Amino acid sequence: MTDTLRPVQHTGFRASTGEFVSRIRSGDLGALPVVVGLAVIWIVFQALNPTFLSSTNLVNLTMQSAAVGTIAIGIVLVLLLGEIDLSVGSVSGVSSAILAVGWVQAGWPLPVVLVACVAVGALIGVLYGALRTTFGVPSFVITLAGLLGFLGLQLWILGRTGSINLPFDSPVVQFGQQWFLPDWLSYTIVALSCAAFAWSGLSMSRRRRDAGLPAVSYAVVATRAGLLLVGLLLAVWYLNLSRGVGVMFLFFVALVVAAHLALTRTAWGRSVFAVGGNVEAARRAGIRTGRVYVSVFALCSALAATGGILATARLAAANQGSGGADLNLNAIAAAVIGGTSLFGGRGSAFSALLGVLVIMSISLGFTLLNLDSSVRYMVTGAVLVLAVVIDSLSRKTRAAAGRA
Image (cartoon, rainbow, N blue to C red):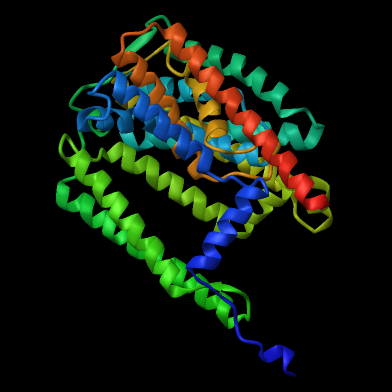
């Protein structure tokens, strides 16, 4: 009887700090390498060009990150399964072509065209998932074929024109280029978001305490929420010195938060991590792995199509190069650099946000320095390799700690 009445352990500031240090020592670095790397990149580029950290340039950074970052969210999801999707660039290009041809040339209603773009992307993902689960074809091969096939479909949809401009005064282009939040609204969203974060943390702590499990103290939760509030208010204030927070970037951040909640607060999210960690164990635990694969690939391709819409809105045009160039590799690199493991079972939706900020920071930094694109590609490749090396070392450290 006395064992069932033991007091609940509350994790205070000292215990939380000790737990963080223990995770670092065991190889669970989390987002720390990315945050440190992003800080180093910003410091170096600011030293080389004082305009890099100007509010105007950072607003440009956020707006250019939205399309690639949205696609990177889908890559994070498939990487959590230990799979890959090499065709996200081509799928985004197909989405761009459908938007331009269906809306500008065919005259379809804009809401219908937008739904069609995302629906086509989701159907492509369902096809990938079905091929993966029914025939056991590796996702690398399926999506490589999709990269080529859907590139051809994009060219066929665009036809001989090859390039279609969107009306500059249309809501799509305004969304991608001109719509920014009023100052008061941006501050309100920050306050409400931090209040929701605090409420979620307090609720989780209370539920764990009621269940007799170790729980983070209310003081720690309040401190975290306060630090988040201060940090976001400073960021929004600095962006508001220029044009402010773009609606398109806010949309991207909302997708990141939604994906994070789906992965951490739903049975589907737990199934994704379980399948990515050990598919056979997940199957024996009663998880329908086939449905997980199909749903994740469908979401990845739907997000790729959404990213294609955002890229078209940003460019105000769709052409044969939409979804091409380095968009595909940048999305994959952003997910990996952001901290998502290539080996499955470990990562976060926020990896897409952090990773795309790193990728876009490198791109903008070299543009401001008027350096050749070849240098940017080499540096981005080196950063990607470094991220994979850190991931591999972290896995070895955790494995060694587990054997000990």
